[in-house]
Amino acid sequence: MQEIFEQLEFVENPMYERIISDLMEQQYSIVEGFFSADEVIALRNSLLEKYEEDAFKKAAIGNRVNEIIEKSVRGDFILWLNELEVNAAEKTFFKRLNNMISYLNKTCFMGILFKEFHYALYPKGTFYKRHLDTFQNDDRRKLSMVCYLNEENWQPEYGGELVLYLNEYGKEVAKTIYPFPGRMVIFESQILEHEVKPVEQKRMSITGWLKTR
Ligand code: OGA
Ligand code: MN
Image (cartoon, rainbow, N blue to C red; front, side, top):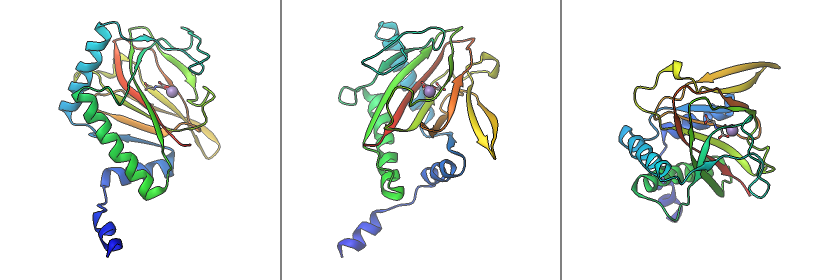
């Protein structure tokens, strides 16, 4: 009886299923509509409010105990989120995220136990040079996630494209992704090198990692 109940509880989610198959086939997935337009606006407002309060700091490279600020590598400003101290917008963010994590753990045994997320703001003229997200001596990072919080009228010529360097049959292929608002990109942290091209307008996102033991 217990088993029947557990099976009934499981509802297949087409969006999550697509993410899973994309990750298996191409090591990344681009998702539109993971958050509603209103949720994106609420997150952007929350980011901007904290940025204007000067809560952000210059992003560093290296791990948290060994930080180096290197403007020639990255120029963004970040603010780490604490899931225990969230406002309404961030609460919804974590609710959706946790829902997806439990789905991934249940259906693909991904073993995601930890997560870490920050807001990021790239002022005009900044970028993040090509890198791998596990360079920070943190091999527990399994999936990288970025959700763009830019204004609705974001144009391709504003720059700030995310470029993923894929390996297709032994050949390097650059996949360019525009940071349109509400778009979410998920990719394999340990495998895909990537960069953020210079921006012409301030570029906003919420970025983080799903981590294993
Ligand atoms: C990062 C990163 C990509 C992006 O913060 O490590 O690569 O599109 N971000 O903002
Ligand atoms: Mn990165």
